Picture (tube, rainbow, N blue to C red):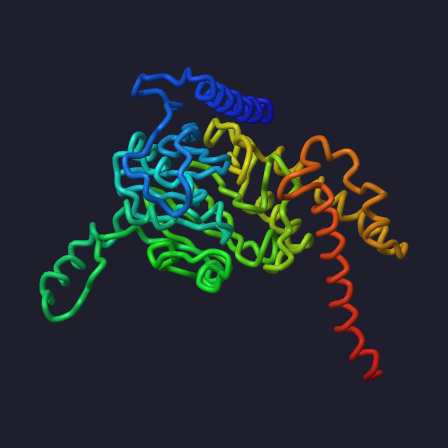
Length: 374
């Protein structure tokens, strides 16, 4: 029964989101100020990137005070309470102003924290706009404000309370600072970084940021809101597509599978009727509708199956072109695949092949000196 309720809940969320997008696309978006699918046109068109105001921001309240907002196809999670507001990922730059307008409509506390789950432009593109529109948590700190007044004119404590704090893995900051494709404003860069496996803090509720190593890339993480029982999976889980394995930036199929399994085994939980009477943990992918543990488990099975098939062909000595011809993604293409676009089924299969081959070469290079020593 728990699984049925959970999946029904996810299906309802998907249906509501689809209905809202369809209303907006046909010009039927409600003028009612309480409508969660009204089309938002920002007052200030200035943004990092070209704004497309014709694209609405879809909003679903998935738990009390927790919203999934979909901007230009990318899911952003907003958690709010008496202390302030936390945003996980800020979406692409082109939707930043529309996202600010949407957040202001549904949230009455300032954005004080932004959490980046990766360094992809579609995850962090709105950082500068969102952070500048927010406030630092120190704005609420009476001691810090007192120190600012005390040392005014003596020490420059500029920036106190002026922008939201951005939290991310150190790898995210490194990628952003060294990017040759995008030049990020200083306000877009993470201001609080960590290198350890997990980062915990309390803001409205306990929040855990868990590093996912060498999965989609070298800078992934997942976020769990403990009381709300919501997990933001970031780029390691795309409910509409095969995952992007960014080999250039440290991604691997082994790390991707391990990341998804770690979320399943340590961050997401099944139906607990006695304690919460909910349908279990709600999981937010980078693209697609709200998911549950069953959806993520199906994704893990897909990854394991395709990885095993490609590995089998590699052991037979097949080349990448021969593996492509063998169609190791058979059975999953209609669900997650694409024949065109930025990331196709062939791109995914090629990335799996290259990742497994690179892993075999690393293991061989480690083993070779030991054999020579014998």
